[in-house]
Image (cartoon, rainbow, N blue to C red):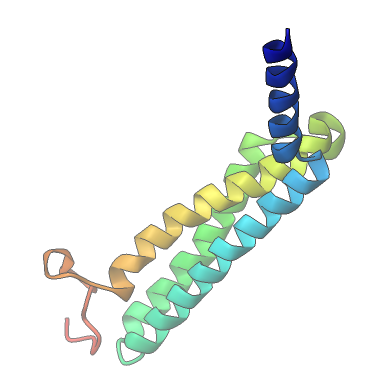
Length: 134
């Protein structure tokens, strides 16, 4: 009996140690997304600086980024389609919204890192062409 009481107390204390309110989980999702979005901004700025002489690439990059933002926003609407998503999805809406934004932003970050830190095997087209030689 003492073992059972001890195990119950132990499991209760561990559960409460990791328990979070929905509001805390929403804030955690927002902060996690902001962190990745800031990383994306840093990489984007690094690319703009590295390739500043390659004006055709810079123009294409800016156009691509504008279209990617439209794509990202459309993807989120596709995942959470509703005229009133907070009513439809309840208190989990923010967590789901920012979680998906983070996932899409991580994918974009990986895509742009190829230009920010080109490796020899990646060198094709504009990757690593800082001067706009092609």
